[in-house]
Length: 338
Image 1 (cartoon, one colour):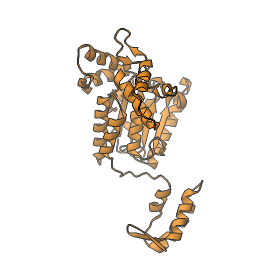
Image 2 (cartoon, rainbow, N blue to C red):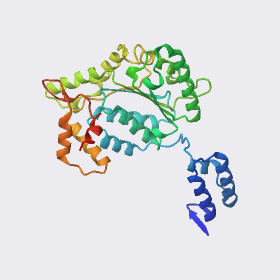
Image 3 (tube, rainbow, N blue to C red):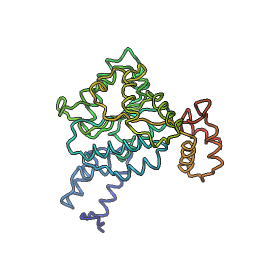
Image 4 (cartoon, rainbow, N blue to C red):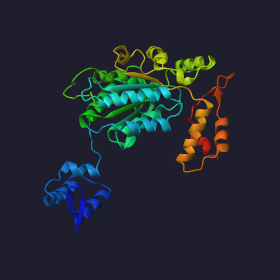
């Protein structure tokens, strides 16, 4: 018996062999290679790479970005962040459509905890590599976990360079996410400056198609101040534009001693392409988060529960009670009580 799929016709027995290999707990390239060799003998055209990539994740450097899917994900999953949505779309679409970028794309996301920075980085990762944060080509570094000791800065710098060099050598479109940048010891991140600069190659490796994403609470006070000024003036938050925040944000982060980018050459040399502000979330945005979490759990959206969870959150400033002081960060844990 033969099974047809597209232009290939493969014996059913061989399909069963390949499927059995796919289900194996530990699948090694040699085993796959042997199976592919047998199939190739029958088909005459299948390559090792074609089949291996069906069983293991491969780096598809030419994989196009689905702009519509990215836009939909940001619209449906990221609440109250019109600026971040707009800039992320513009940055990723422009970068991925450029066949010959002059430098890697570098984004720095800023705002208080719970405003959606980590969620946005997850959405970007999933749209760049199908397995998202689980991908072998998406690398997450957490300052307090990977770089905890101030006296080991030189060691961290050397390790970071080796990690990035090795991963980009394996996949030119690798994504690197640095979380808790505000807790990173100043100077550590400057080690990657050569990789973010306008060099065609560094020691034989091109970094121009890689993406670097920084996540930080630093600058949250500056962002909140601007948002409050708009609110007190009776203006909608959607009227806030990037030009209202980006200049003061970059300067504020550069001069913030509690920021991993304090006096960083990355800012001094203009190697960060976008400083993306995440606005503080209002009551209605917290409600949106509760509804989304209920739907994610497969539960019916009960508006009474939505209101009760949102009302349990604390808001600031004390006299005006406009913004959630934890954003949507504790929504999941609070829902566990209902």
